[in-house]
Image (tube, rainbow, N blue to C red):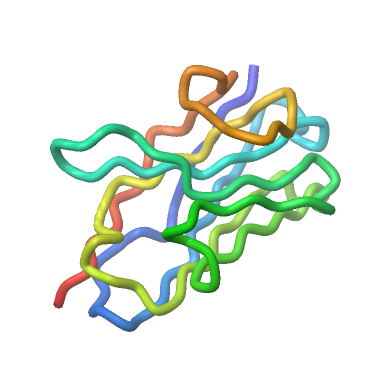
Length: 124
């Protein structure tokens, strides 16, 4: 079993930055692709970014391209999401998830482990 705990959320003004962390425990995540999703109030959970097990490949949603950067430190069993130029529409609960495979597309139903999320609120 893998336990994932997100942190780093909070309230930020539009144009600001936040760095989210996802710390894993229980077992190593070095063999898992790691994925960030988000869910805004009244909306479905949506894909944000993913990184392969080695960290050599990344994928981003169009809404995140050029503003967000996903990274990982397998030695620390941690994944990060650097979010810059934040917009009010980025307001959501951000979830970290682990997937056995690095795929072309990432669906919430395909994830093996989930964190409980961290709230990001971007004020205008």
